[in-house]
Image (tube, rainbow, N blue to C red; front, side, top):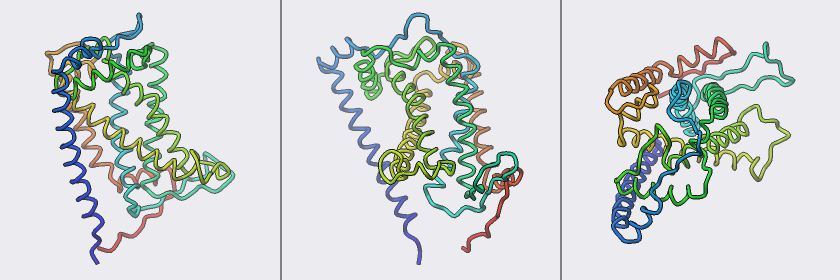
Length: 311
C-alpha cells in the first residue's frame, strides 16, 4: 500500500506556509495602520528603535568575525540537513562504530547511524568555531554590541519590530552599532539558543551517562528532544529572516561590512564574495552526500554499509 505520510506532510507544509503568509500580510497591515495613529507616532518618536552600546565599544567587523560568520553558516547547513534526516527517521545507509584505539573508554563504543555520526561530526566543528568566536568576542569587547545593557532595549526592540513589520525600516548603522531588535536577537542566538542547542544535544547524544538519565524534567529524553527541535526551528526562522533583511536593508553595505570588513555602500565586492560563499556551500551540499560521508567515516571508524532498501 502506498504510504500517504509524505503526501500528508507536504500538504501540511503548504497549509502552514499559506497560513504564515496570510498572518504576515495581516500583521503588516496592522503595523502600517498603527504607525499612522497618534499613539503609534508618539511611541516611535519616544523609542526610535536604536540601542547605542556603552562608550568605548569597538565598531566595525574584524576579520575573525567575518570568518566565524562564514564557517558558522557552512556548518549550520549540514547540522540542519542531518537533523532533518534524523527527524524524518529514514533508514541510515550505513552504521559507524568508533575505533577504541586513540580514545579508549571503559565501555565499548556505540554503533551510530550515519546521519547521527555526521551530525555529531559537524556539530563538533560548529562548537569549536563557536568557542573561538565567543572567546574573541569577550576579549575584544565586541560582546557589548550584542548584549543588552539597559532596560530601554525592550520598548526600543518593540519599536524596531513594528517598523520592520510596517516595511519602513528602522535606522541601520550596523558598522557602529545594531538597532535594539538586532541586539536582542543576536544576543539571544549566541548566548541562549546556541548553549541550549549544545546542552539538549549533549543530553540526546550517546556520550550522555546512563546514570544521569531521567524520565521527567529537563534531563528527560522527551524534554530534551522537544527543546532541541524548537531550537532547530528557531535557527531556521532566524536564518531566513536575517538573510532577507541583510539583502533588503542595504545589501552592498551589509555584505561589504560582514565579508570584507569595510564600511562601503557602493562596492559590489562583498556581494561577489557572498555569492561565491553560497556557491561553495551548494557544491559542498552536492559533494558531501551520504556516499562521501561513508568514505570519510571509513578513515576514522569501522563502517558497516547497509544494502539498499527495495523500491
